[in-house]
Structure formats: C-alpha cells, structure tokens
Length: 496
Image (cartoon, rainbow, N blue to C red; front, top):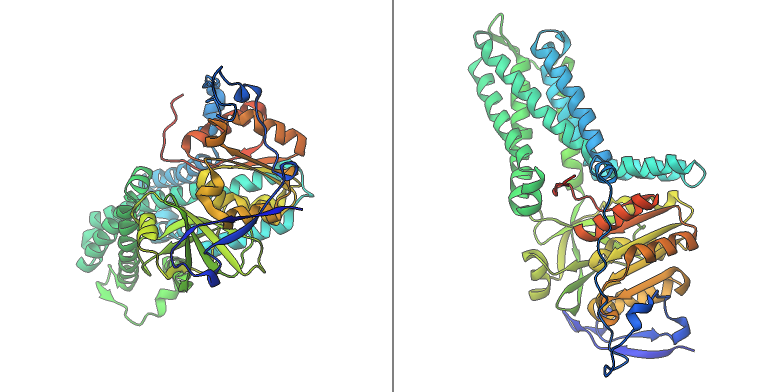
C-alpha cells in the first residue's frame, strides 16, 4: 500500500475546511510512480561527485528545419482565413470604388456592418461553444483523420476570419464616408459628422487589436478595443439611423421609422449589438479560494465542475482587466474547478500579495483547441510549466489521452491540489513528468514525444508551452509527420 506524505503549503486564508490548508496526498512506491524517460547521459557523474547530484546535460544543437516547414507553420489556417476574407473584400472594394459593383455602392452600409457583424460573431463565446459542440458531436472518432484534423484547425483559427472581416469593415466604412463627402450636397451635416466619429472609433478599436499592441500593452488594448469599440457601436447606430432616415433628394427626414426595417444595415447592426452584449449578460461575481503553494503560482478554486478543454476570463472588476486561464476540472459533476495563474504581471502578482475572496468571471466559458480532443481516439497532451492549467482537464477526463508535463520541481511549485488530481486520475502508464530541477535540465523533448506518440498509438499532439518550446515542438512534429496543434503566437514574426 502507498504510504502517506504530509505537505505543508502556504494558503491565502489558512482555512482547513476549505481544503486549501495542510493537505494529505498519497506518496506512491517506486514501482507506482509515473513513468519517466531518462536518457543515459543524464545519469553519468564525474569522479568525486555525489551520485544523487544530477549532471546538467550538454545542450543539444538545434536541428535545422527546412524553410518549407517554417513557411507551412507561418502560413497557418489563421493566415489563410485572413487572406481569403480580406482578399475577397478588397476585390469587392476595388470593384465598388471603380463603379463595377453597384450593389456594394447602393448597400455600402450593409457591407460595413455585415463585415463587423461577422467579425464580432467569430469572437463570441456562446457562438464558439455551439460550434465546438456541433463539431464534437457530429464528427467524433468515426470520420477520417484528415477531416477531424481539419475541423480542429478551422475551430482553432477562427480568429483569422475575425481579423479579416474587422479590417475589411474598417476599409468599407472609410469608402462609405469618403463617398458621402464626395456627394456632400445630398447629405445632411449630422450624417457626415457621425460618419467621421464612427470612422475614428472603429479605426482606433481595430488598431488597438494589432498583435504588437495586444500582447505587449494588454491594458491599452483592452481599454481601447473594448470601450472605444462600444462607442463605435453607439455611433454606428446613430450613423445608420441618420443615414437611412434622411432623403438627400428631397432634403427631408422620415422620422416614422417604418422604412428602417427595410434597410439591411439596420438588421446587421441589431445582430452586431446582440453579439457584443451576450457575453456580458453572463458576467457574475463569484466566491473563490486562493491556494499559494509557492511564490510563483496561485491556484484559484471555483465552485462547480466543467467539461474539459475550456478557458475562463477573470477580473477583479466587472468590466476591466479580464485575463484568460485554462480550466482544470475532474468533470461536469465535480464540486470544483481550478485555474493556475503564473505570477508574472500586475494582475497575477495581486492574487498572491492581496488574495481576493471573490472574482468577476463570465459564466459561459470559451472553448480552446483541447475541447476537440473528443474527436480523436487517442492523443498526446504535452505542456510546460503553468501550461498544465490548459492541458490537465483533457487527461483527467479521458483515459485515451497521454500527459507529458515538463517543469521545475512541479509538486513543490504547484502544490498538493494539482499533484493530487494527477495521482488520483492519471495512471502511471499514460503519464510522463519531467522535473528539470531534479534531472539537471530539460529533456530531449522530441525523443520523448516521438516515443510516447508511437507507443500510445496517438492520432494527434496538442501543445501548451512558451514561444520557444512551442516552436521547437511544432517544427519537430511537422518534420516527423506528426499531426500537431500548438499555442497561437501571431505576434512573433518568423524569419525564413
């Protein structure tokens, strides 16, 4: 039988009744520990050294990857979607500007708001959950592998449609306002003014979402994209209503509103407003417990269980500074679910320095790429460090997924809650834990991954890691012909 090991942890409230104080987890005998792959060179020691002191492995030179593989990784489905939607719109815009697309000239408002409507829909959590549910239930396991891989790729990269349609909507709006000023004698001053205001609001909101701004100045992005975007929605309503109610030929206003329902741009604007508002209807302030197993990590515990492959947004404020984290749960009927917040920025530091008792969150969580794990018969989930937060649920809830977790002193860093979940639900034969502190360095990741992939009979690999780790594994898998999906890092350029 397994003996018991008592682990002391620092907690935010020091309340044993909440399950976050002194915890007791099973310490497994040697033959029950998770399987670990140890290359022979890691066990060599110099004369005079203690045998239990790990020797740091000699850095392995990085394998040169062909430019063709780098090009395929760079020109992913995200960029394909962006090029398709943006290119198609630019063809239409060029035809409209040259007078060869009369519908777009006549219904320029619909072209603007239609694009913005579709862009917002692609980022709507509820729409995304519905889309994932349909795909997961319709195509799980029985369809050809290439089809299931395509479904995962499409769902992961819907942001390409979002970006392409959003930027196209900005340019269609610019064309509409320019045409309005060119025919200013047929336009009321109020229509022209609202056209300029709307243009500025939409442009600022779009520019603030550019990758460099979004990832290096998160708060700047959030304030401008959200609040200026809301101003853009309000000004769009004013611009659409004023433009549709004013008759430039008779120079009169039709204020009855009866004619409005016959304009396409009105219906598109209604849809856009609904899609913007829906996620905010689901915002709630919920009680949380914070466990602090180490100064590097905060484990946030929430009530109720969740299905695997979801992420949640949390904040100390109802409308500001939302941050997304992967959700760990034993299943939909579990009592709790957890988030792992690595201490990096101001928000995560505040969770450690001033642990809250409540946080704001959207009750409808959004689906990540792991949510499509149900499509596959078997798979590998590899992660590093705090990436376990996005990866663990898949392996907890499905016996068909193999977990590889590379980190430093994981049990001490992440505490008994995470260790307990792993030991209770993941059998040693489908688990590799690599402690780089104990082993003296990082492993030959691709060697471990290839061995696990073939021995487990996996169909796909999902990665959650930092940029360098993600790139190395993605490149290695592509080179080895292993189907793989990793973290999206669209703000880093790839030099071919």
